[in-house]
Image (cartoon, rainbow, N blue to C red):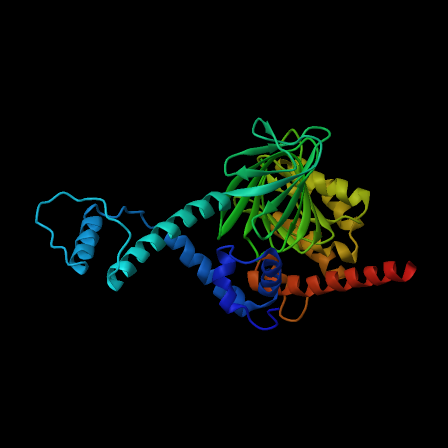
Length: 384
């Protein structure tokens, strides 16, 4: 299915008019095909503009004009100023019958749109255990979560949400989550507390999760996200990529990595989960505890640099943006030892945060991370 481009299916996909299986295949194609993804972005932009158009009611005179036309086609002249009467839908004249059929179709389409809107404005929820609630009502085997409603689980409850036609989210015990928005160009949840696991097969930045300390933007992936009672969160990515953002602070987290957030600060620096405990502890202090003390006097940064392995270039590359002065020099020097910058990337340019050079270096590093992940998978497979 869809071995070539998916241009003809994009409109239906955008309006959620394809099956879940087709949706997944199209989404996977969009992740790999720049041409189709660009066309899909144009369709989404058009939908956004259309949604902003004012909704106008048809004028009352429209029915009178249609009624007059029906009378003319049936050979029944109508006096000017007479009161409109109820029109029967039984006509023998072909044109009149066609007009009546149009009326039936219009009414049917309008009704279909109302029903579809109500359905699209809510997501199906399946009970996986215990007694999850939508609002104050416990759900049976299944229920529907409408925009604005909260889904809550207690200590023994679990649930699964079907995210339109683009994926699923499993809800762990003691979790509170709300459906904020669902439309062709954006699907959004709010995780107030607890833990969720998302598996999304959609193009980048179509599915979002708001938390008290950052917004998680899906880039085509699977991940878990948990929020504690203080509003801090922890993201674990198992496949693909996820972006965490608060205002102008952003962290892009790849598979195998994690990232913490804090209220008022936003996302910290992403790190691979197999890094040393000393590395992770020092990084947390650099990110959240010692920002106001001045980077050049922060011992934890020295610990991060000393503990960093070649795999931890993910963290060091991100730290280039978050430190300055002599600390940025130290981060660059350690990063250059672990992964020498490719041709076209200079020390002076990186220290000045030249975007072209930084992204060129990042592309080189990403290939290294991917190769390491493949080697680990082969090692695990060979040992089984």
